[in-house]
Amino acid sequence: MKTASFFLPLSLFLACCAGLPTESHPGAGRAHLRPGRDTFAFANETVWQYEDGVPKSGPLEEGAEGNGERYTRRCFVMARAAVQFKKFARFDPAQPRPEADGLARLVRKVCAVPVWEPAREEKDRVVIGGWADLHGFSRDCPELVQDHIGLGWPTYFRPGNFGIIFPPGRAAQERVREEIEALWRGGEPPLLWLVNFPSLSINHAVVVVGRRGEHGFVVYDPNLPDEPQLLEYDAARRTFIYPRVFYFRGGDVDVRVAFRGHFR
Image (cartoon, rainbow, N blue to C red; front, side, top):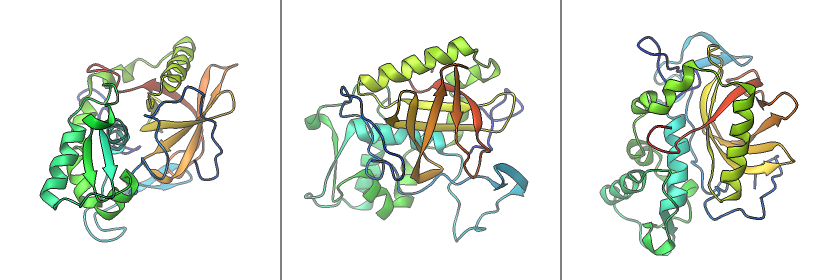
């Protein structure tokens, strides 16, 4: 899902770190993602052209930036799948690499496990031979991975997305911060939905991969796979703040924790 792809009922779609020192909580568990290892090497490409953080006159055409079909509207898919690989798969570079059909089956098997289930023991994980981590695998086999981690359009109709029409209040944002903290302390990588309804300035999914200071969450952004971003929380205003990036001008965002069950 692209930042410029939006969900509205019946009318719109529903919707460590380089340069960012992080602090891991003492209770950090094995499910926490490591940027550059447990994240994808390719990006979720934006549908729209951007200038100064806002969409320009029209969407990018196929082949406008390189050859072949562009990989768009997959930020929720990539965020979810990165956590699924971390919790349910194991990479073993000592084992032979399966053929393409076998690899595709393994990818689908990993992504078929509900992401909110507990991380599996090493012996129960799906084993992918020939690579050391997800980053290397997705770098060498980008099209295969993209074809089998999931379609983009079903994420527009997640039951949890219907809450977009009810912007959260400040007290709700404080509860979200507490939930993120609790998940992080428990070793669960929080999957977050960033949105500014009724403004259409951002509609995006990220994954917390680290901490910075008392109220900073370092996140994996599928649009910027090699550039972890800092999601900050202003305790005085009880508001989250996302930085300026090419597709967003920066500023306040409403945050929800996503993929915590069938209806979230």
